[in-house]
Length: 213
Ligand code: ADP
Ligand code: ZN
Image (cartoon, rainbow, N blue to C red):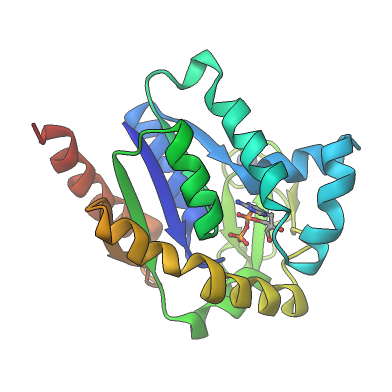
């Protein structure tokens, strides 16, 4: 099963992606994570991507598409993958059509007035990747699950978030229509309820998808 996860920044894509990938044995491919890892390691891709991530703008399509194409050519994706953060505009979606066969697109809709607070309070575990909101941490500086160090993404600040939301609304949201026309979209509503609630809805839709002839 090859899936795409769509949704505004802060809609909960990362959290759901980890759960979905684990449940269905899919390789989780996050272009944001790939860029952040390259930036950390000071690679040429990282050096190129850094200014775009800092501003909340998209890394150029040619570079991004090449990275995903290479990743999908590796043998470990044979049993399925989950794309998180790609495609992000119509150009990338058309490129993806030339090298991938997608079975479903999970779209998480969310009230955008919730997003700023969510994103700016977000903390991620360096060790296991779990995502938290400060309101759940009671001041803890380490991951409640594995004890790893928690960090705040550099682009999770109000200025960059505003730009990321603009990019989402102008360039990424049209993909909902694109994949609806292909009959691939599965719509969900992100809420303030615990992530498990949304995951259960996604799980039951994906179990249905798996049973299609
Ligand atoms: P979020 O969805 O919370 O904004 P991501 O980790 O998906 O976070 O993306 C972070 C940043 O990485 C984006 O703002 C952008 O600069 C870059 N990026 C991620 N995916 C893509 C993509 N498909 N195309 C271009 N840039 C991307
Ligand atoms: Zn952890």
